[in-house]
Image (tube, rainbow, N blue to C red; front, side, top):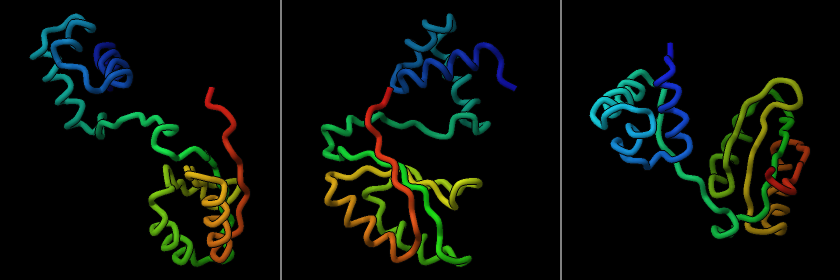
Length: 137
């Protein structure tokens, strides 16, 4: 169970995972060493599974942000999953879901032309419903 201090640590790390332990300790009113020990315990307990970065996709050239609901054409999903495995350059997330569809893909493409090519190939393995992101509020 997470206590108040653990929750404060996680909130600060979500805002800036590159913060020094000393800087994090100052924000949560602990020494740098005590903070490092708490963070290490959170990592060892699996609460913190890793650290990541937030990309500016406009600068990476992946301007077209999409969500694609996948409706596989049969019970064997392996052909679809093999196709997706070879499309990692576009994949942000691949969720197996219940409800509307079988999978929900979050993808980024450099252009509408690349998206169209991807969808044409995808249609060999599954039907889909496409949603394009207009703005991230």
